[in-house]
Image 1 (cartoon, rainbow, N blue to C red):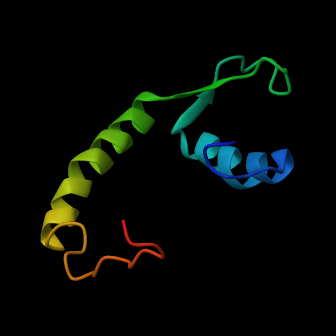
Image 2 (image 1 turned 45 degrees about the vertical axis):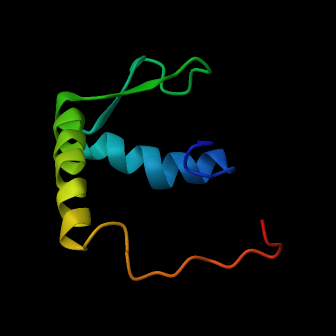
Length: 81
């Protein structure tokens, strides 16, 4: 929850976890007790495949853009260093 920058558990569960569980990308570590305080989630094989595809695709997209936006100018600092 902290990684995604969310603070409301219910919204996080409904808007993030539930869709990932329904898509089959995540699974519960303790499926018999979905509300357990010790509940954890793990990637399924399908989720790992998707993650691998995204990791392969990202450098290619970045290269097509010409790097990480080379046309941007450096932000001026308030105080000279």
